[in-house]
Length: 104
Image (cartoon, rainbow, N blue to C red):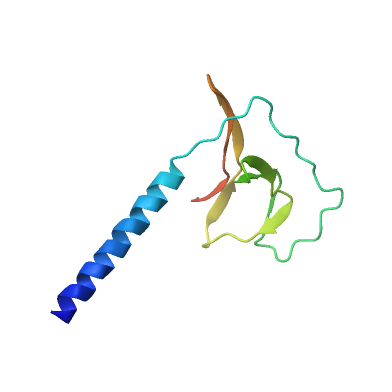
């Protein structure tokens, strides 16, 4: 009986986590005026030869886009390359498509 109860609790938690992750991933925020990226004046040296400079990148914080660009990042796995984020436009306005790592 305990084993069955533990399994039910685990499945309930898994279902709740899946519901929250899928609903937040599908949200899209549109803007009429794109925010301005303030590029850093001095790019620090790369921590290693493997690191990639990520220039413009945006995330939603407090209902608005905030710049998180201007940093070095290491690929998550050997052979991955960084595809920069970009602004896209549709009838409702502009929205940010986040940069991502992809297999070469």
